[in-house]
Length: 78
Image (tube, rainbow, N blue to C red; front, side, top):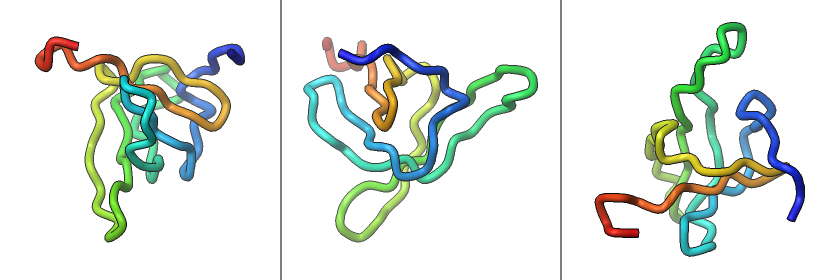
């Protein structure tokens, strides 16, 4: 597996992968303050109609070049 990268290098269009390893959408916007190194979360485009959903930083697991992996959802028991 490649080395993880910082949230500050994430770009729109990167794949968003859920805890099961399935692609759930693509990054449409990275939210945060790079100067202060405060990562707020991501806006993710999902589905064929291009709906957008917000993913808070707490739900982001590891980040690799071109892919953002979501952490298991504790509320779902995963």
